[in-house]
Amino acid sequence: MLAELACSRVISAALDADQPFPALAAALEEALRPTCWLADPGRWAAALLSREDEALRFAQLTQREQQVLAALLDGDSAAEIAAKEFLAIPTVRSHLRAILTKLGVSSQLAAAAMAHRSCREATLLARMREVHQF
Image (cartoon, one colour):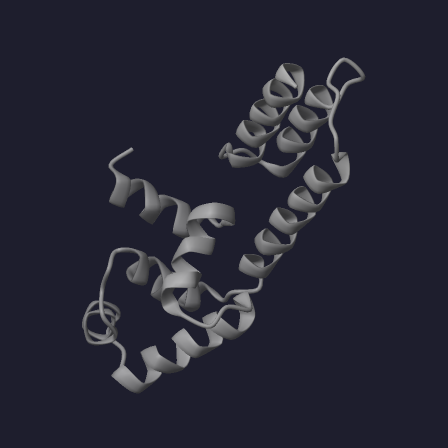
């Protein structure tokens, strides 16, 4: 039981780390060596595939959609995004709908949470680091 808990923590830390996909795969491979016993290794593989799927969804966003999402991560409203990005409010709303559709989420809050969890796009990562003052 203690060994399984330790392995679970190592795997969870690897999944939550901000690292490129190949490094993540290598960290998981190391954690899943035969010395690490898991009751359900398929669960960890499913989590990894889910993270990869989310990262691929972000790759579908256009540069402008990434900029709008980055402003959303700052906590800006549609009107504030429109003013900052020199867009009309209906255009911002259109970009927000496209973002939600491409990410497969139903709310702006869900899109922001997914961005914090899985996004590897440079524009959004830079904005998240500014917000969190890294």
